[in-house]
Image (cartoon, rainbow, N blue to C red; front, side, top):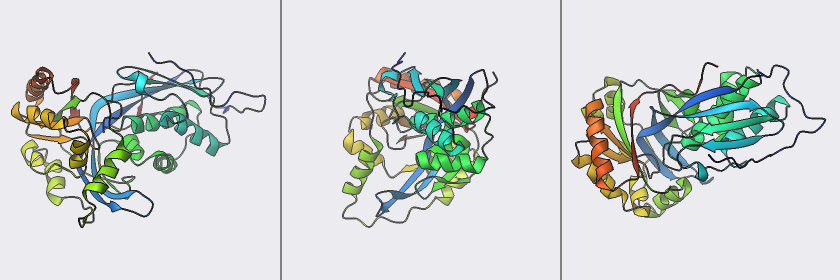
Length: 321
């Protein structure tokens, strides 16, 4: 377990703790995501890109536990916990700071992350932790912050954070933070975890390099994909999956192509890089097919580990204490 504390603000006599603070910890479970469509526009003057980002939450979860403390600290356990920052760059810590500042409080909380979502894997693990910490602290401190304000804080934290709070299925526009719910049937997935991570900004820079001489169209959600998603038909969805960042991720990590090929050869209906990668996602027909594809990928030597999951999954949820 990674337990390097980062006391971002020591308690002082003037420190304020919310009167409604619970004495017992609050744990929030939050899902990973897969982008079933990621359409990317040209770089904007602010450096961001307009997106048409169809999010689908999957049943692979992190848990964040908020406990009253004398200072803001973060710890983490689970696979790749040593790769999780435990200072203020962690979105969980930033969420606590922003929420506390808006309420005129000190972020006197210990945040413990039970990490199962791949780190820097294109599945919004860091964003998920930010959303979970926000909801956990809001519940711990008894603030009852309106949902719209929580979503506003999420958007301040990062483009993927609002969807981590909401879950289910949604179309993200703007930077991906403006969400419109969409209908989704039930689907089954296999995820292949790669060695190491990929920096999302680096993948976008590579996208810009690869498209420098091309006319990049305005991103639009695919009507065929949205219809397939609503139908619950995996064959129809497989025919419409798309990720404009895939070529950039493969350019930076060519070894991912062998993983995609191995999953397709094992019977996956479709294979694509998840978000900015390097995790790869495989849509399969059912649980039996998921087990078969996962076993083949494990045996292929092209990935470090596999995870199976279903979708859609609920967003950030306070667990019973």
